[in-house]
Image 1 (cartoon, rainbow over the protein chains, first blue to last red):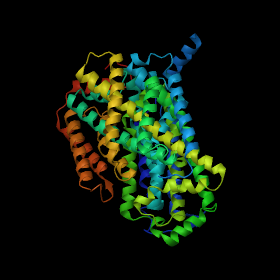
Image 2: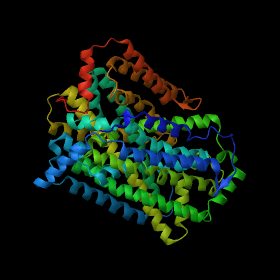
Image 3: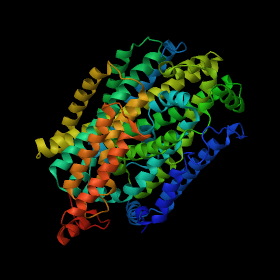
Image 4: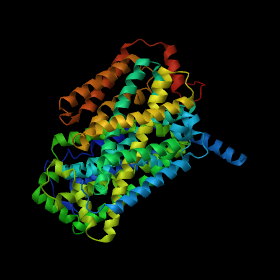
Length: 82
Length: 503
């Protein structure tokens, strides 16, 4: 049985990804260098946003299982009966 | 928005679209005993599969405002509107806090509305009533926003052939018909169609905007850096704080929206729910992310617009794209059809949720506790009409920019969050502090907004109210004596194991 709320590391990761999404740690007004025509700071932010997407998606699939097995077993039984 | 490319062609597309939605609603509800059960009518029999659940989550969370409101914001704020990607993604993170357990309890206790959880957990009339008022306020405001937007989008698309007022009334009638015919099933199945059109629309307008800008983003960045460097440089500290505050506000607010919570109840299984969320986590980059790129390109294409002018920027862009080639002309009609669909797909979910809360919570719990499900569904349908036309009356005087209303509705709604985030796991949490927490949080958020101080050092009033709300909940509960029996009672109710506790 897996429940995301029970695992502290999940929330440490979530808070860090949100906290560093805004570029407060870089000097105000910084534009260059450009990478692929986009300011580097914006690229970092986009990168962190994509990591957040991947992280949450992965958490949903691997760290959440409360009654799934029970439910799927029941569905399987129903399928066989019908 | 006066669109020159629309007119009769758009009229045909919109007409076909309206008929298609009614047919889908009819098919979705055919043969089901919708009027006889609140679970069937409001939650699609708690049996939504992966594809429908995913698209109904998508089309409901992303409305027409995602394009019509966010592109102008990107135009005005520049690259700092990158925040629109993580704030939509954070919703899934907040879901992960409460949805897994709420799903299990809701299936067992057969919840229909979010209020069912609140009255089940706190057993307090005043907590339930304040929560209902906050949620209805948020929903009402959200629905109002959608109604205003439908009128603008349709009258713009048809170049005024369908005037604003007729557009709103026409599409409301279409929405009510398919909702009555198929309930939540109709809403969810039409969401599949509306979600797909919205996605296609965003890709098409991005391609068009890129073509207009000469096909490359590097030129765009350099031009902005030369003309409006404040839109491309690292933002100041206050904007950065506001960025994080917005992630929290939207992430928590959108996750505890009543219609969002009801989608947790509607899932066929835990597997379906978590798979849908896992895919939803990837939608912000290809939805709000692409809209951001469109808004940024517009900074170069249409420099120097003020706030009011920039609100029209998507219409102006669509006109210019449509003028390039007949292919783009038709693509822009589909794009605006997608916007209309996105607005309706959000409005129908909000309306259904609103009706369910009035009929099941207010009428079914307090006015006529002995009412049958059939009666409640009838009351819900009637309430739907009254609410829509009441809001319509308000909609004739639409408020300022769309983004401001968007923030406003979250400020109060978000105050119910402790009921879910703390209530599910902390057994000591008591009804009295929860009640005062919501009242104090909502008052702080409301006063800040009404006095024109939406933010303090970049932090939204809703978040400041929510912090106060959490503090009151925690300190108040710790100060109240709690018996072992009470803790055991709450433990039984909130456990994932079936202890035979029902509503």
